[in-house]
Amino acid sequence: MMSSYELFETTADVGVRGFGSTLEEAFENAAKAMFSVMVDLSGVKEEREVEVSCEAFDEEGLLVEWLNELLALSSIEKMVFSSFEVKIDREDDVLKLKGVARGEKLDPGRHNLKTEVKAATYSMIKVVKEGDRYVAQLILDI
Image (cartoon, rainbow, N blue to C red):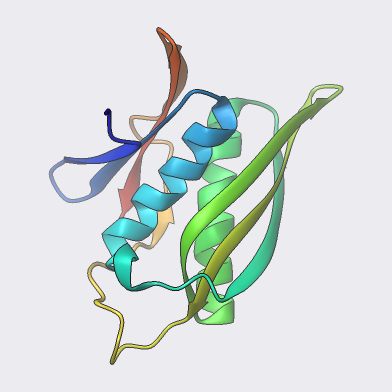
């Protein structure tokens, strides 16, 4: 079975790629990849659900908005997330994402913290359909 996400090395930052049979699934897995850089996901319980919404004019912009919104919510709510659900609709010329992030309050004593992620960037960004799967990729500023 193919992995739903992977990390790839760059000089100073880290790249993430989310894969999915739908655009939404690729966005969900890109978020999972990003949080896997920050914390060991296997130790994060799905105790609380936080709603997320954002919009952009194209899929690349929407990916950056989605991931940066998750980083902001993680910081504000002092939470780490391990699972995500996304719905993307087009209204006129705007892509609107409504989603849910599930996780729990950050507990440094219990969560295996890794690297702090400052932001999702437009560097090396691509949101494409390759064969029968979607790929959502970008570089994280760490």
